[in-house]
Picture 1 (cartoon, rainbow, N blue to C red):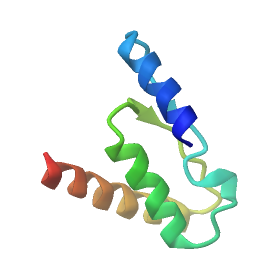
Picture 2 (cartoon, rainbow, N blue to C red; picture 1 turned 30 degrees about the vertical axis):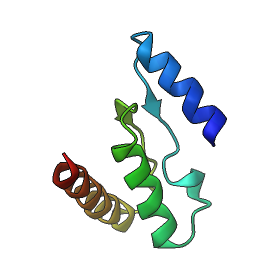
Picture 3 (cartoon, rainbow, N blue to C red; picture 1 turned 90 degrees about the horizontal axis):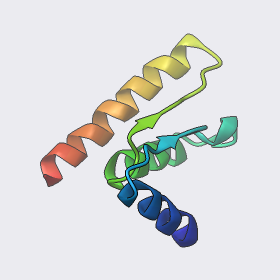
Length: 79
């Protein structure tokens, strides 16, 4: 993870946009806590400009909105 983060930081410093894709592990993150941590990392790392999230159901959308709101609230509180 540290190598990837370092490369992404370098790309960001070069003025490139960074898109976080498959943010909830391509459906492999079965536990909500894992999905929350992934969302928080993407929102708080400082180098991700946009994200994509895939959904299998309406409840997935609802959960992602809750998780995103919580992650952004933590980010705002830290600023």
